[in-house]
Amino acid sequence: MRLGVLDVGSNTVHLVAVDARRGGPPTPMSDWKTNLKLVEYLDEDGAITDKGIKKLTDNVAEAAALADQLGCDELTPFATSAVRSATNAEQILEHVHEKTGVRLTILSGEDEARITFLAARRWYGWSAGRIINLDIGGGSLEMSTGVNEEPDCAFSLNLGAGRLTHNWFHTDPPERKKINLLRDYIDAELVEPTRTMRNYGSARLAVGTSKTFRTLARLTGAAPSSAGLHITRELTAPGLRQLIAFISRMTAVDRAELEGVSPSRSQQIVAGALVAEAAMRALNINKLEICPWALREGIILRRIEQGDGPVRKVGRHKDNE
Image (tube, rainbow, N blue to C red; front, side, top):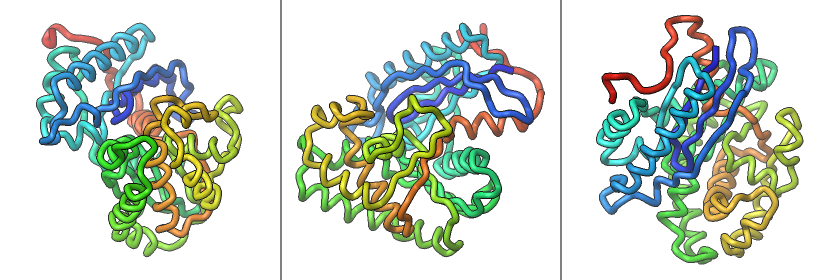
């Protein structure tokens, strides 16, 4: 069965198409995404503006058409932090459905953390023991820990790299005073969740998922994506601290010249690095291993487990037109 997963995140609209079967890993067939950056379309009341809704709708329509072209038997469309926290979330969902025929499901932050944890567990297996998983998106930070496929606890905090950049940094490069204030804010937000996670005991393996962690690892010397999925990539606390001291003094244009940093990521990588450093410090993590699987893979794995039930063909239906 060919599955399509449509991820409407804070930074991008991302479509992944895979061939999936029980008992085997999903085989990637296509990977498409386009920049969105919904946090830049928030008004003072926390609603996504009409311009942002139109851009989102156009992106979803393009992704749905591509899923049809790729022969996807089923499309799982979902939205995460930016739509989840928007004050006009229901209006957005109805507009997208009316215009595209795609009915987005909003994932709760806790579900996002739990499904991402499943992907990490499947990648590393039972021999990894207790895992701590951290995932930094554009709008939120997800954290979880556990010894099984279902984590013992899972948290989602509004500490995404794009959100923090939009709310805290208004100069390029960011002011040193603002960086220090943001550090204090992140530390305060992490106190209770990380205390709960530490109470479950130390982890045998700490894992980082998401593009932010992959970029940070690349900037501290990890192998490029072209080296393949199965190359071990790590991010260390000392390396991350040195990196922050370096990139926080650079402009976004200069950061975009660094290998592994795209122009869209260069603007928010400082905030992402500050979140990563604070979370690792709060959880006493000296080294993270970068997992190539994350939320979208977790969604696919859950769908495979449901078996060969009725297949819902993607595309528009007459009652949606």
